[in-house]
Image (cartoon, rainbow, N blue to C red; front, side):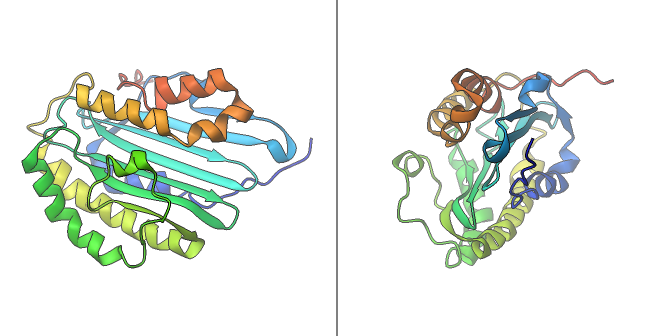
Length: 246
């Protein structure tokens, strides 16, 4: 079998996030191994998927991560959702799609999906100054999808460019993580509730599952059945209980 080197450009995504949100206690969710690690195809068509989910802050948050690697592609996405209290806690969302030597799509947003004006005001106060710092280096892409325009916050980034832009995005990502953890999560977790996904979170997940670029990347090699289960049941699926401690 021919050895293929998989592209490695965004492996820092999960370590960066966990180092900045780690004190919230991440407990791996109970999920089948087939949806934590999977490989498809051979040779130049080889594709690897590494993914997981976590119960965070005693179930008041749910984190999901996926990375898709091929010879010329490296894709990573991280989502941190509130479960039962989207009126108090926002969604942290990012996605990097690297094709060859180009950052095809870079998305970073912290979304207030529960309709709470106080939460949106707090998010704006924390993130608008950071957006102003980076917006000249991370200009909005010309081909902004309609589905993203419908949900984006004023402090969101959706850009593309060469890999130098990816380096700037990583810096912005780290600062957004710090601001979200310190001012939007930590002070409000005591008041937040754990439990099943709030209807606003369910709708947000369905919207993202319907528009995820993961389907086009995965289905040709992983098959439609596995891809749909992965996206709808796991990556964008309902919050799950933590796996039993071994």
